[in-house]
Image (cartoon, rainbow, N blue to C red; front, side, top):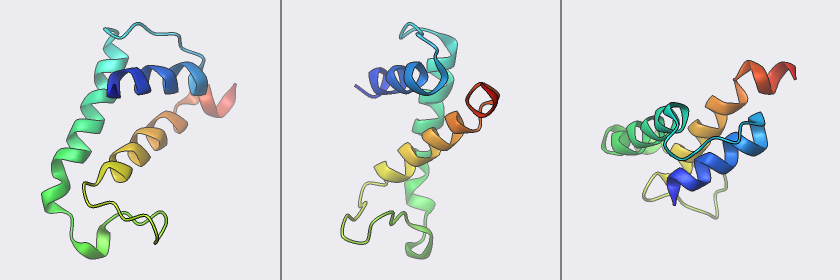
Length: 80
């Protein structure tokens, strides 16, 4: 489901209708995995609290926030 969500974001944010096995989907998925996998190294002061009422005990919001930030930094989003 994560790859499908990434595919959806690429399509809607960047206008890229990519297949699930596209290398860019793989890169974005690897970013998600790297951020999520580093959750053990995040201190409480750095933990994601996008909304204080919605805690992020599994650091999933943090991983998705970084994926969206990655996509929003793409020149195709910024300049088109």
